[in-house]
Length: 339
Ligand code: KG4
Image (tube, rainbow, N blue to C red; front, side, top):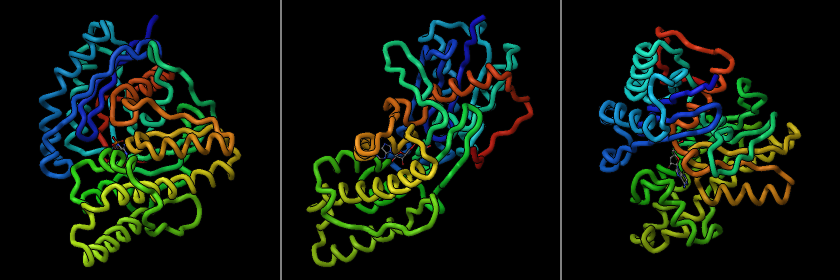
């Protein structure tokens, strides 16, 4: 019998629903929330309210595009955490109510596991190259920067992670300092393509092991700008593209240095990237260069699977469904949870 999983994601500011049948993606609908742009960041209460408005039409659309009726569903998988509590609660409550009303199992999914397992989404007409276990996954988003050793679908170990800011958070904050819009990541990415990555140098952390740190870079960026603006008040406007390119290059260098170290230490050449920052062109190019130079077999997700989406929740739910790893209706949402 077929396994048809509805996935629901509402951890931050995207309401998403997806349907996966026997491991194949049938639909993935994402409603983003433009309401936060005016505030330069996600406003939790507004996010939660927008999720409430979006969740029913988004699920309806996902089922419609998949050509699946709710009665055909085998289980409902949902993001349990980490994320914003008010946002999570909308998806979690909806998923539990929906599954209970249909009399089918509910499956809790860790958002971070979902990002990693996005590499296993199979869809008609898409390349289906998947990493072999064990592989390394660099998970870089607005809230996380981690190097994960993925031993199996359900067995992952964090080898290193940020001790302060995440890579995406640092880029977003530096972009804010430059007076650019929110989120800064895609804006910096676009500007960086026209700039010189070697124009400026910013401080890089010196911490042992495989952990990351990005708060020093943020401070170095801010102080450097202040000094340069004393000489030229319009420094940012005059040097926008070079600043973006140099900032991006520094973040990419920091990320790749530790990833290279991990690959060497664990003797692994299967290397994947996941999370919102993996949409970044500089990072994608660095992966391609490492593939050539070090013989890495690299895995870069399709753009729509890098940012928050329910397809990754549905595929993770599918694997858990095969393991009969269901959850109870009492299970609460978690704003902070590790892998
Ligand atoms: O995974 P994600 O969508 O959300 C979570 O944090 O869970 O990641 C969002 C982060 C933001 O910091 C955003 O600025 C960054 O990903 N981002 C990018 C790019 N697209 C999104 N950073 C650099 N270059 C991009 N093209």
